[in-house]
Image 1: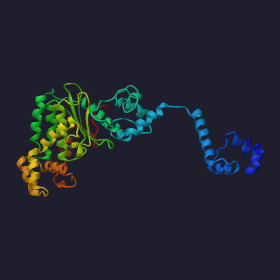
Image 2 (image 1 turned 135 degrees about the vertical axis):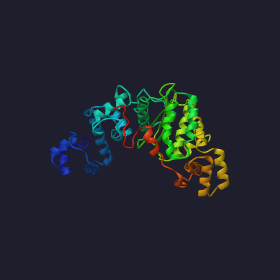
Image 3 (image 1 turned 90 degrees about the vertical axis):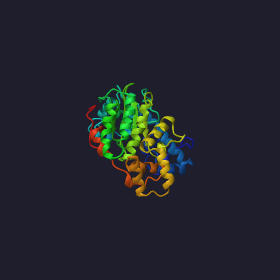
Length: 363
């Protein structure tokens, strides 16, 4: 307007509008819309995009003055965006009416994560306290771990004995013949000083097990029983027991997520601690020389009689052989009729949390 020597009245006449409207536009009280930007482009020969860009810049600059910064918003984004808060409330891990009761939820999260202020919760990028895990852990996996630790810290078990653990493994191997025998596993583990906890996985966690130590004489094994199958149960349990035997988890929590498929392998691509635990677990479930011989003789067809005959010879349930074959062949859709449910046997005798039950701790 200044370059052309135009007054606001002149521009009002050109646009066919009233002069107060032009005054509001010039004063920034009226927004430049896409339609108005096109009209201004016709009049001034300035691209409509330039007018819209100026409007955006003005709006943003004005907002930076008017909007009060609140660092709690970023904190809340990490907590409520990363943690399954609703599920944690439903499971009884934290106490609040709903996720919208943010003040109560935040207070409960400081209790749950054992910190004095919200900013110290370790899933926040700037938090100084961090759980040292062997592999990166998601917020949901860390929440699951905290629940396992909370329950384990209140358990009473016998004095820990490495020799007792080796003896326990032999006793556990005698239970492989029938799924219902798994009910004895929690007692056997407690007798050798291992705090054994079963916590249902959070929906986002996909965690299977964990091994860590409360102190030098207090190993903990946590399991999620995410897959209700006897082959998976015994593999994960023996995997965690190997961590205990080798004293893994004292300095870095051995948090095992998605312990199936490639992560259950024994190749060089698997980290050393996990590889030796997988090797021990596979050998525990089915002696690997017997497995190799069975596959060499029967592949690619595995008859029902072959399964049952090998299981009877080894005094183990056919589901353990089926699980190993699924892993070896990569065909998890096959041999499923031989797999057996296991939760029904374990939960009644184990300290557990989930599946409708809330462990009586921390609340």
